[in-house]
Length: 223
Image (cartoon, rainbow, N blue to C red; front, side, top):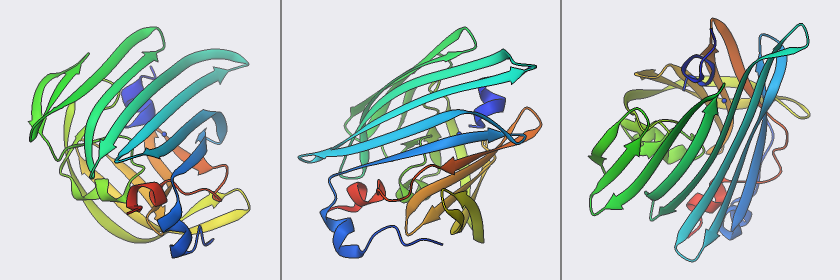
């Protein structure tokens, strides 16, 4: 049976010149999610700088069909606020084929208060969410599940050259592996998140970017 745990695992082109990266205040990335060769939905990420804060909106809608009938459905709406490279708050709600889940985060000094449908408690303030979009997330050893609040201990390592299918052909990427309490591959181009691979119920699922003309990392690294 497919579940969010099994399905999400967790969803060479120059993207912009450095001068443009420094000037960016908003960006968006949309992915098609492919499982066993079939398109099962979209993951849309939008980031916007407002003063010192970065506001993040993530919307996911997936459907797995068998013989034309929807056998599994997953939806998520997640809203985050980041400041100075640290998460300030999160409010995430999801529907895992009829089973609701949630995660709320609030910063409390150098700690984070987490309230989730699976786990609630405090974690170190340098923890990050399982939203992957910032290259700096790779530095953190603890990722908070944006679905249910579960704190996940991970080890990230650079795996060399990779490749994802972009809107106009293959993209040469920098590939990273994430192991421990997660097992996924992430792909970046010039610190820009462009791909994901994870095991989805025994089948590989991959993220394919619909467009690479906008930059989300530019908002993060904007000074």
